[in-house]
Length: 120
Length: 153
Image (cartoon, rainbow over all chains, first blue to last red; front, top):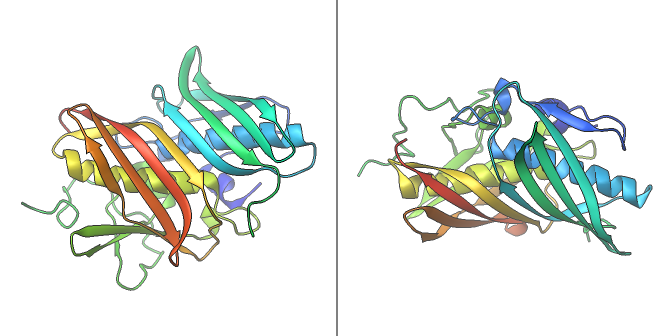
């Protein structure tokens, strides 16, 4: 998919397939839980996947993401990543994501994606 | 008062990959967290009372077109704002409870992203911190976060 996701060990399945991720040693913070940057990485990716599926070929660029850190996840835990579109206009897609480990919520996130790239 | 940036505790994680050279004038940051050491190094320099932080984007941080990945940029923001929080709460520590990130412009492979984070409010329980991240003076990212103070270290 890309240098970053390959480097951090994320191999998402085809769009529309369930997406989960197993926490390994290199994803942790100093307290032994998943690093916030890694969980935000997963939240953005699952949002992007939902946006891509919804746009059917057009590209969505993340312009804003708000992430709440609800609980931690230790090495070896499997985190299920889900997202759903809240609203879609010609220019913007609003998307909401949730990361869970079993019954426990790890992160909730809300993202805003621009349908066209924001580059000038 | 000793400067924890210049005199980090001995049990800090190492700066990470030693094969990535520091840009001139920058020093590798000691990195607490395995994930930060994995994606690092990150750098800092002092200018008067301010501490500047930076990361230089390489292929590990970008998509196939050479654009900095949002996940990497949010990780650098979390690490950078976390440094400012840590300096404000030490010898206690703190954990992120919420981060809001706006993506203002593009950052590309080879770019040096800089930030001077600022603690905007500090209570006994909660720290508010924000930062504007620039490449060559141009804003590319703004982030603000809330941290919960954890007693002890």
